[in-house]
Image (cartoon, rainbow, N blue to C red; front, side, top):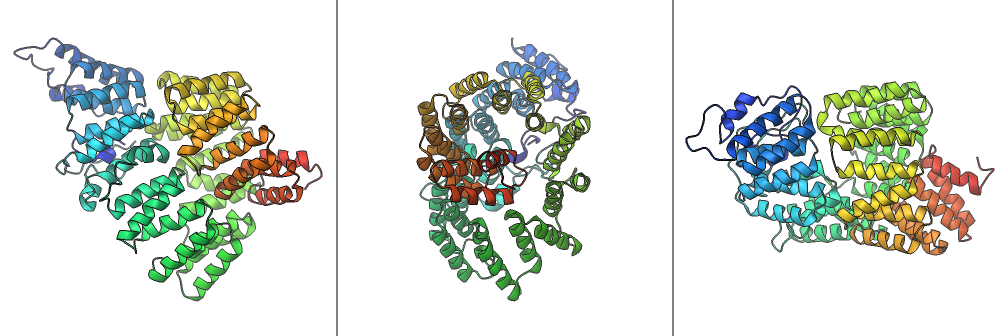
Length: 596
């Protein structure tokens, strides 16, 4: 998210990559106070602001993002709109959230009718989980008149939005008053649950268009609130019954809600209304429901009806992969590649299968081909994990550091990714040192502080982890991720179980279909001695995500409740899907010592 002045809200923050293109002479000419000439009536604060901007830009050129963002925040307090804007851009791009928040507030104070100021204010507010502030800024943004279209200008090479131009093309074309651009910006900086919280109740008024309702519904589904997604889809379909996205949203909502009959009926209804655009709807629903044979039969029926062969073969490959038949999946993905129908995801799946089969060389070769693709970070993380498992630490970390040099705007994400890899491979101490260095450069960053709390628990410092999570929760008391993390940590260590359950239930109110939170609820019930009562939540969590650790918990609850045969079945299916899961293997070995 970097952009030039007057450009798209999507790319509002300028790229801060080396070499920095904002030279001091240019900056001086742009400042209201001016650097080259003395104003006739100098203001007391103006010289200080001008000097601070110079110091900040020098810090940027030297790669000292924290000094730059904090110095710019001080300059913004005494300067005008251009400096406050630049300060907000720098603070956000540098991931210095306290400085970014001060600067964004100042920019909005100086330019109360600026849509760009509203957008950045909302963006920083969401990163700090200040939902009310973000919602107010979103309202102001949507009520303000759109700015005139700007001439296209390129985005910096380091931008997450690389490839876009600095125009409001999406908003002008869709007539949505910039909502598409704003949503894209917010999603680039925050996760769907936060974005949904900011937009919910703001864009779904009585006269909301099907497009807005569907957008909100998609966010709701990504935010683990399938009931809200269903309501949005039904409202959209009342106005536009053949809307493709609204119909698909409805069927997926029913799947997540655990209502297969409604999901299948909705898919069939859409297929009858739109035979061409909805031809794969039923097959996709069957796959989402885990009904492998039904999905397979439906795809073969479509093949007989001359549906696009590549689309069928790709779905059959995914069906085999999801059900744990990696040999068939490998053959089908390879056939796609031979037919010239492979995409980046096909290569990723083939590499994953090679890794599962123990063919490390083939897996690394495949991930290497994706090292500069749209899946680059994911591929590099997986390759690094394989290298770490083979005790090639330097080579593993070099993969991530090289990506970091190419994409400095993703520094925080990379720190988190590297810390997770180190923790997963037995070096929690190294992960903590990395996170501490990250927090020195990006003070009070929620993602780094959260990851540090999780790694503390992995390191065995449970008390310190709980204290860290409590500090975070004190600053963000309604954050469901933190509520669930603290609740689960307490439950997993048999601490304050009643309080742990209350925290988890508070999280579940906001994210009722989140499999991680449902797993936590089942686990705390199990820890409190209610194995039978734990089963429904754990079963629902697994149906949504098919996560191996959830299967471990679910099977353990079933076994303890006296349903050993059901537990065996759960574990067997989960192991077929996730044969390398160590937590699942450990649980099976504990309860079935002679299992193979």
